[in-house]
Image (cartoon, rainbow, N blue to C red; front, side, top):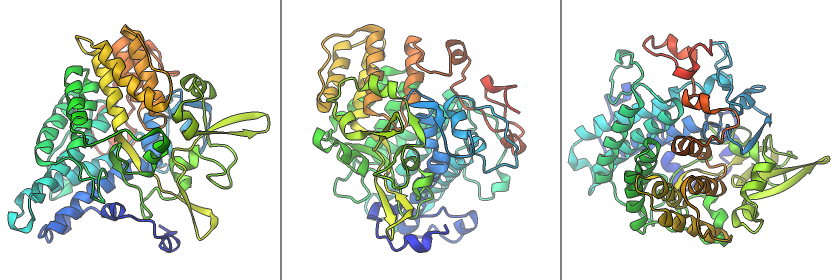
Length: 493
C-alpha cells in the first residue's frame, strides 16, 4: 500500500491484530514449510486474513447484508463507481459491465474469487496440519488449529450460500492449482450439510473462549461454532436445531450482554458480548476510511471533511424502528446532521477514526467486523421459538424483552403468531442495525410468514429467488460448468 510508510508511524495494532497480519502460504512454499507450530498458526491466521479481504472488498459485508434493505434511501447512495452502490441498493444486480472493467464495483460484487481463496487456505491447513508430527505442538493446539480451519471453511461456505445460493463445493487441497477441476454449482442443501459436518468436528476440537487471551473472539472457538450452527439451521428453517444451538451457547455462560451505559463498547471490539469478529488493523486492505463502511456512513465531527453520509439512511425507517427516543441504541448509535433544509441521520457505530500525523486527508477506520454477538443469538433464539413446529411464544417474548430491557424501552406483554415473528425481526433491526444482518432477516421472515419487507423484491420475484446474487459473466470464462443463478438467467450479459 502506498501509504504504508505513513501508517507505520501509528502504533495501533493490538496482539490480536498482529495475529491476522499473515499472508497465505503459496503452493510452492508448502513444500518447504509446515515444520513448526508457528507455521500452523501463521497458516490458520491467513484464513481469517483472507476472509477479511473478501468482506472488505467493495464493503461487501455491508453491501450484501444491509444496503438492499430499508436502512437506506437508494436514490441517495453514492460512492464507488458512479451509481454502482445505488444499483446494489435497488437490487439492480444484473447491470452489464465489460469483463475488462475489473475495477467496477458492480462486477466485484458478483465475483466470489476472494471467498474461494479463503476456502483454499482452509483446505490447505486441514491437509497439512494433519500430517505434521504431534511432537511439534504444545498441549492440544494441533486439534485447535484443525478446529479453526474447519470453522473458517464452514463459515465461508455458509456466507457464500446466503449470497449466491448454489455454489461449487470443493474440500480438496491441490498442490498444483492448475490441476483443480472445473466444478458445477452444488445444491445449497449439500453445501450446508458439509458446513454442519465441518462444525461437528470443529466443536470437538475447540474450547470456549479464553477471556484472558488477546486473540479472544477474533479466532473461531466453540462459541463461534454454535453461533454459526444456529444461523445455518435458521437459514434452513430447522428451528428446533437452531434453538438447541442457541441454548448451547447461552447456557455456557461465556458471554454476557453489555450494560446499557457501555453499549457502544460493542463496536470497539472484543467485548464480553462479542462471539466472533474479523479484526481490522493498521495494515489491512480496508485501512483508509474512504474504502470502509466508516467513510460511507459517518460524517463530521467524527470524520473530518464530510458534512453528510455518502449513503443516506432512510429517515422513516429509523423513526419507525426507534419510535421510543429513550432507546439506548438510538441515543448512543445515531446522530442527526443538517445540510441546507434537510436533516440526515448518521450511524456512529463505526466512528473509530484515527488521523495519520494529524493530516485530515489520511484517516483510518479501526472498527472490527462484528459477526456474531450474544444479543443476535438471543433474538435468533426468539425467532426459533416463534417459528418452530411447536411454537413457544412466551419463551420467544422473554428473549425479546431481555433485549428491550437492556435498551431501556417497555417490554411486550402479549404478541402471537405472524405478528410475533414480525416483531422479532423489528427488534433485530433495532439491535443489529448496520451489522450485516437485516437482508437475511428479511429473507427468513418472507419464507416463514410470506411477509415481504423488501422495497425492490416483490412476492413473485422472491419466489423466483431474486434475493440470490447473479454470478458475473467473467466467471464463466474460467469455468464452463457454471450456470447462472436461476432468477438472473437472461437478465445479465
